[in-house]
Image (cartoon, rainbow, N blue to C red):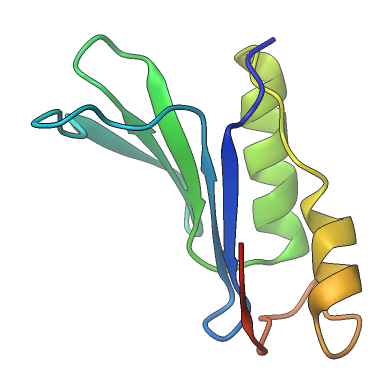
Length: 102
């Protein structure tokens, strides 16, 4: 299982990004596929997942992203717990507002 190398969460806009690898100089995301309304999967030219973007952190988007990760041999961070520990209130299931973390 490939574990993520970075988790970026912006509680102010209610978005998150789970990175599985960093792009090399000059390398580009060559494909982005919308898994659902709030989840985008980014791929490199070889079809490897670069990252998973949660456009809006909701319970449904977390579940969708975590399910995709599990089905594709990717680890997924405990995003709900991170939000519970860093958000001003327990906001899982609603858009999040707060400070930039990660």
